[in-house]
Length: 284
Image (tube, helix red, strand yellow):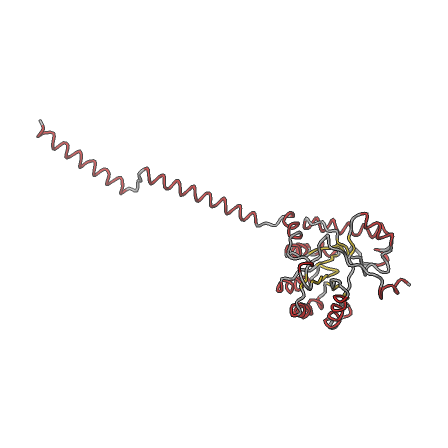
């Protein structure tokens, strides 16, 4: 009986070995290998979700723009020789060159912009904010007889500009510079209405006179020294124009060599306003 059952057992063993050999040859995997594959798939899915979240996080939202304007890149009081670079009348085709020059030195400036220009160049407005510069309001028309036609007209121009800036970037700026500066046209009645709406008027104490053309570097450097001697932070007015952009590298190089640090204007900084000086004669 035992002798007869032995061949059967041997055949059964050989059959089992043959079955396992064929099973593995066909690519079937045991349960532990399947568990490993499931883990790998789960890890891949997680990495895809994470990557998607990272990519969505890179998109710039209005909230991010606001945070960029409120960052502490450097306030004036943190430096021995702070200076404010301000640009009026933009943005326009010259703005990218100005931004490129500022970026080379990691300097921050303040751009007082006109509403029609913002509507024409919305991407430049966003770039200005995105690169950490301050933004202010310069009105709509830039025409003396129109802007200063009445207190209400002047205010409405600034509020319209404020709304457009907010629509484009999510930034609500209260920094304003009136066309041609506050003297002689911006009288006390205008100031009172602007104060009611918490608009902060900024003039300048260094006039580049870049609108005249020619080299303005020497003119600016002389004024900077006088302003510093008077204990003020030099605030230079320039214009968002191509000729100015061409000369800006010379000015920034000078500031760097003489250890000046251009910083942007913050909402709570004490404004620079005209104290008559040589502009009072224009009242007549």
